[in-house]
Image (tube, rainbow, N blue to C red; front, side, top):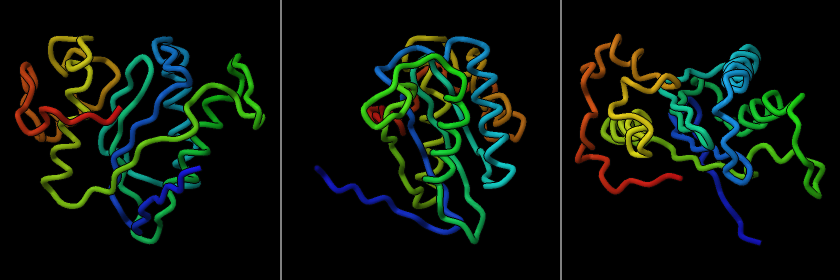
Amino acid sequence: MSVYRRVYQPGGCYFFTLVTHGRRPILTRPENIHRLRAAFRHVAVTRPFEMQAIVVLPDHLHCLWRLPEDDKDFSIRWRLVKRYFSVGLEAGVNGRREKNVWQRRYWEHCIRDEGDWRCHMDYVHYNPVRHGLVAAPNDWPHSSFRRAVERGWYEPNWGRSEPAEIAGMEFE
């Protein structure tokens, strides 16, 4: 068994990728999008975090979080989000008595600097285009892209072609 070490940094900013079990496209159902939003809101009440960017695709999601300055535990937040989301869903159970809704592990990356943040922000928002789901990030409904445009981080027509900074990046 491999030993995986996560980087925990108080007040850190992190990029995450979570994938559904067996890459099942359960995130295409409107009730599951609602369930996911409710899970994030529910967890943030007791374990605050700032969702800086998110994109939800049929079988996975990417997001950027900033944790409070005195907190570094993103793992408990993901465990709670996954649990809250999974309650009430019809799904098989594995040998550990866990529902087969999400893959056990997830990808995380501690953001190092402004340039790293920008690349991962672009990756999040360009992902539906990369997967051939839409022609431009603004066309995908389950993304924080429009909010980022409102904040002045993007032009509304950004991403009609792949930005050079993220060409070849792969976090799935």
